[in-house]
Length: 277
Ligand code: DGL
Image (cartoon, rainbow, N blue to C red; front, side, top):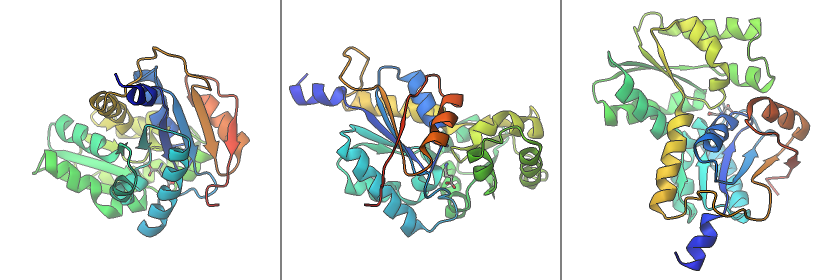
């Protein structure tokens, strides 16, 4: 392997989201690619992304990709459905790095997993309004019936840590009643915050609905991508620096304790940075 490819192999992977949601993807990368280093950015000052315009999300995503590029990452995972829907195409054109999102992997697995061809998608207003899941599912399963439902209140409830609270259960019940008529057998959790509510959602929907968390397939796709570029780190060399680094744009302590409640490792610090400067 050439010297520069070898150096790249040990570089970290950049992962970003509007807040804590992308940790569900980072967690999956930690499990499936234990040799990889990660630089995570959570845009906690500007969450939620789901109600903002395409232009704003592109601007935020561009700033974050620039930050991650300056940190020397070898690839970027857009661990946010809204940013994947609105900005993935644009940042992929602008940055000379492999960049993947979470929508394609999630849509693909749901299209292949459904038995009756009826798929539900829950996500932010931006993601559902973009129709990106419907379009991508139809690439893999043209006749599928896709029903989307925006669930904007779930993001602040997750950010608040109210994962099993009665208020959260009531809000989720109200949103999920949208699927009562449609006989879905598969539901995509099309926002990276939602897998943190998995048990609540599953209890409401019952066992006949298969919940899809795109994080799992995203980590698999990342592995395939890094392998294809010859830059997958099998953990052979322990580079200087922390294996996992976390940056946020606000409320670093709150982020840190949340991260520690869901990650398989203890993080010592989340560093506060001003992303828009
Ligand atoms: N977790 C993000 C997503 O997957 C964004 C949620 C938000 O900030 O509204 O869409």
